[in-house]
Length: 317
Ligand SMILES: Nc1nc2c(c(=O)[nH]1)N[C@H]1C(S)=C(S)[C@@H](COP(=O)(O)O)O[C@H]1N2
Ligand SMILES: [Mo]
Image 1 (cartoon, helix red, strand yellow):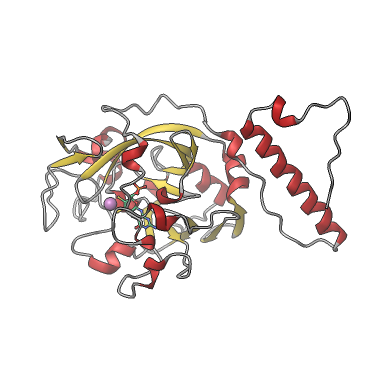
Image 2 (tube, rainbow, N blue to C red; image 1 turned 60 degrees about the vertical axis):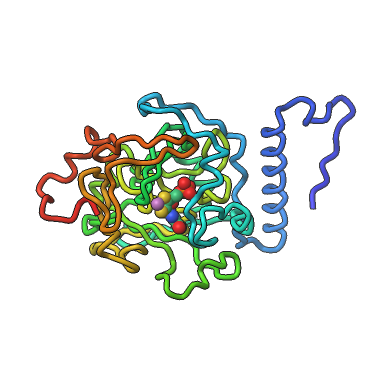
């Protein structure tokens, strides 16, 4: 173990630097100590990536404006869908059990060379920005939040998919001891979602590592999830451990459960009702308002072109 001795002229660094930077440096020192120990023991040890907390809040990208107020965290952070931790909206206490560090993302399937990368390393490589996005759950509630992350297209570029790749598939962690919801046997665990390569290449799909200017609290799908704002919320898989590139359309969690109600495309459309309820309006979290739902959740200008020639598909279920 390294002991860090302070010289007489140094002031304690937590007095000289903001707390987040101080914590980050301590993490760096921890990493260096690990490196030293690793090489003493002959190496070969995989190090935990250094902390990235000091990168928040990230600069906002003003290209993504909202037509409504941001939902305060006290509403969005206590009304979540995260079936791994239970079927109620109050998963916050149970999600405390989610161990988010270290966390490794596996990139595999039809790529030049499969690899694994620590989430903090990935964040440092990709960089972070903040975007304001609407979110529309298939259950007809909605919110608007400042996500922090980077475009999915950056991750795709890093993964180097081969020409045979037609879809990207996202898989959530699987750990029944940590996530008691995964003991519910009639759900097709693990949670899986997917996009076409054309969808993944659009500017909007966002790899999310933070919200409200800080790293993701567990109940939002820490430490890494996606946000696909023109599709119903279930397309935005949380706590992802694997991103695979495939030739065949991935079978998703909700399709596995009830394909007639939750399809692969799941684009938001107020004119196409869910088999059991209308999608014409939505309840805005934290308000008592219902507002009209917009086609593609208001992102039609950016995404409608993706579906030319696909009119025969069930695009809106
Ligand atoms: N792994 C996983 N991802 C998930 C879910 C889930 O239960 N498990 N629920 C989905 C649904 S239905 C919605 S609406 C959003 C909710 O995200 P939020 O709780 O962060 O608002 O996450 C989606 N991603
Ligand atoms: Mo949802």
